[in-house]
Length: 439
Ligand SMILES: C[S@@+](CC[C@H](N)C(=O)[O-])C[C@H]1O[C@@H](n2cnc3c(N)ncnc32)[C@H](O)[C@@H]1O
Ligand code: SF4
Image 1: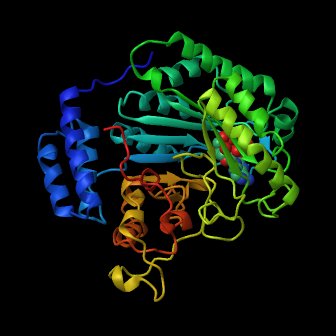
Image 2: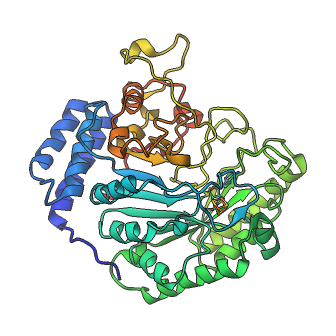
Image 3: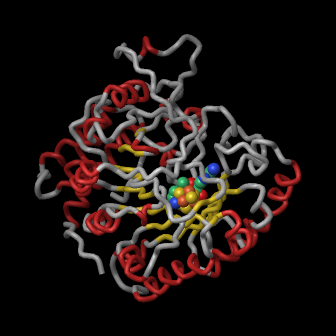
């Protein structure tokens, strides 16, 4: 059982009411009134006694004021702890060099945990990082923090399962096949039996906590498949596997960044795409019957809301649902000029986006990607920092590029470092970082 710091219900209720009022006002662009709704709550919170709530309310005030330099700390982190991995998936474009999160950054992550509301842990393979267990054990002491681990699941033993389930964390288990043969063909070095052993450990822990009060009821187990030529005929088997092993959701996401014949979306492989289209009704029906949430983000129908393949400004999310991508296809340094006024920096003819499709990610957090490259969120198309060995996360948080993101996004301008789905207005609000959180 994990130890957590206590929560004070009355204080939670007070903050929740202030946040609800402020967010509704902000949605109507009544920004000063939103600030006024939050300030009394802030004055009643102590950064020492209630670090999480204090930072949360301060951050919401800074969003409402469209501040570009923030005194609040990040609320969310996406952490690529290492490039190392215990297996070699055939479609994985992650480098196999032994990069690890620099030691100084690991220390800094520890110091940020008390004010965080969500962390996406991944790699490489997070479980291979020597820092992961210590960090995760500390993370689950923050009762407000939602942890999500994106993993191949092969290193989950009973001890890990207990920590994960009792803390109500989420596991996105990447399984690129519905059968042993396909799985082992794609997830090279991965053994089907080891995958099942990890799932059994999670389900044993789940049974131990069944009916108990506390956070374990929030435990979430998501089956994720990167769909490609070799596995596109196994969607139905994948759903059956998910049912047998008590998953709560199934994500089908497209292969990206690899442009060989396995990328059926890039090549518009008619036979393969037809196979998927034909399978989808049965997949949907089965998921609904089994009570599995289904998330299909495959570019099958030339839908502009769907992720494009090839050199376009869309950055599909391997983690699905509300999770961002660490598999950025367009990681290049963002162009930052001198900080002109936001209005003057929009190129002629560039589309503006409406208020409802502007996002809050640049105010909410940081996502570290390959070799420590960092972005506000996994879908953002431009990195803001490359070298976490030289810069702290807090330096990156307010560096000129983050300020630039906030300046342009805060004025609802469709900047060319934004993902096409975000700026097209099709993204639901919670996917734009708005109305987040359980408070
Ligand atoms: C790079 S992995 C890192 C986390 C962990 N090792 C895992 O496999 O889940 C994160 C996600 O990216 C997916 N992925 C790997 N290569 C991909 C590709 N070429 N296109 C799309 N997703 C990919 C994986 O299947 C996994 O769901
Ligand atoms: S997809 Fe994940 S498990 Fe597979 S090689 Fe890449 S990092 Fe490792």
